Image (cartoon, rainbow, N blue to C red):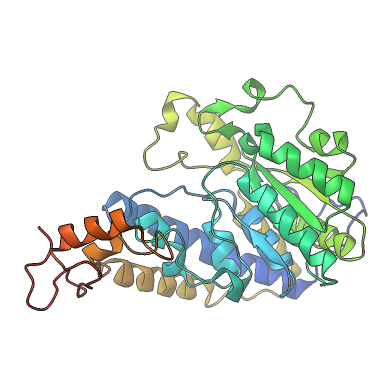
Length: 355
């Protein structure tokens, strides 16, 4: 589907059915509103940091909706919309960005691994889970999201090699948005394309328009089906663009021009799918905007309330059995006898609380 919303497939993949296209559109509308709301909350100081994925909605939703219930998703820090599309509570997705916990949801419940901040480490996690699933005889595929910068990391190459040799049921979805923070693609790789990196390891690889939700969904679905049938891994390079800065701590005007951004705005993934669906004459988007606003309002309300914290959390969950030194530090900080416990406000009944 081109930027004007006209189907231009070459017959390699079938166009997803109407209901799937509507589901993709709905997920992108909701995802974009979620992203805008979280960006605003970050500017208000409710979150420590947030990496927007505005412009990459087709990659996020097309991948998440292509997953089967038994499959695993291994997202990065930029893939909040994919995680929300997978069904995780939006506020639980934001727990780590608020600085509360490393992960706010149960990875096993939704089969979504904790969002990965160190570049490319999730590629190895995905390959490991996929290989283990195959050894156990389970029908599960691992899909890992990574950026163009992550393909220059050693972890990615180790993951690609292992996956190829052992034919692990894993799909690598590379969201090539053109920049590794501020470093443009041509300054970090000499490969003709990022898909060539997969080919170099003997992996079936494709390059697609990452702003075409239909193409992302069709390609990832095919890769998942192939992996589940024993066909081994696939690498998909999805060409896309992040419209916002790398994070709220970045100034994108220092390394890219406005006309470059404007060119990609013309390739907007949400608008092009809306145009295509509207041309079908059987498209009713009534309710999607209201649903998106409802989700945003819920996020505003819930994120506007400070999470309860306890000073004793500084000492919990580090060791299954705290060391003697840590126990002494905890007792000293909380003014407790060694082995004592604090209340949620940091006070031991009868004690002086944290100093």
